[in-house]
Length: 439
Image 1 (cartoon, one colour):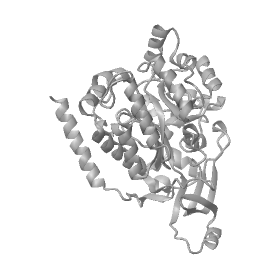
Image 2: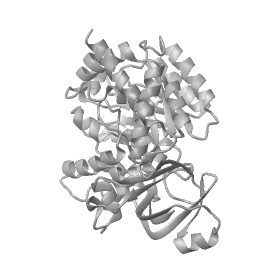
Image 3: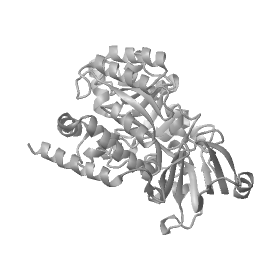
Image 4: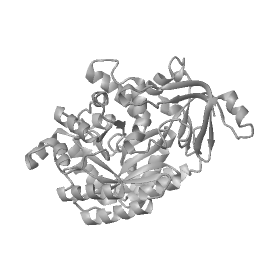
């Protein structure tokens, strides 16, 4: 593949160094990057290899969406402009209770994967009901994923009680233990929906089977106040007392932070997943991502679900993260373009614990690569490839996507994907949901 190559392979998130290589090519064998060198050298070293020539393109690691409820694409736009708890309790949860099923999650996940691939995402982390359907869809479509099986105390269409959530989740973990693309993790929904005993069991089992823990945490001021009223301590302090914070833990949102909470993150090694667009839309608060990075906390980016964000476009999320950080700090240098891009690539891989295989363009890693066409008015002139990727509409310029060396998007078209059938299913679900809502 001939193009400018961008890699974000730096030692630390807070001082990301991005390397731009002009007129370079990448050689791939059996899904693995085996060479990265000037084009002439690659052509000379691999004369018989099939090659894809991409002039005027930027090659970079595929984006990593570290938090989504992918199947909720089918609920996109049905309950906008409400605060979080009203949005959940009066709109989203009732709709889910009426409509959610294995088929709903499978079809919604396939729709979401199509959207993510076309906008440059090659890996996603998902937390939703029927995680077996999500995992099956990701594996079928060749998408890299961390599937976080939910843990709740309340019943759902997938499980009746905490014990059943554990049983089904652990069975899923066993099923995908040796999958090259799918990892599983514990997905306790939030401190206000999961008991102390369930968290303690998660901690024990996560250590036993070597799994991550993915949890909504400090998402709203109401959540924090409610925890203090019920337990006498903040949610993060409660989880720390229960042993649920460690380098395995991926804390999603973290919009309500103080000095003590930040110290707890540093002390335990827990990571933070920043969902700026969703938090802005739900007016949930602001995660000080730049400050956390500067202090040494691992931070990655997530879109959240399309019911709250309306898009799974991670390029838009990383742009929002950079702009919001500058606004909040009053400093235009805060969270620069390289840092934002790193959060969406290698930073995401580090948080998910897969940076040994993906997240940067490096010999020996999996060929999870995307190509962005710069030959358009919106991308020219190209003074800084990194700035163009972060601050322009780069998602619409994604032309090619590879995951483990297999092409998933070619010339802006999905490969081995019946898009017409998928869109027809989406319309069918829209009609079904509307009918249910009106009865």
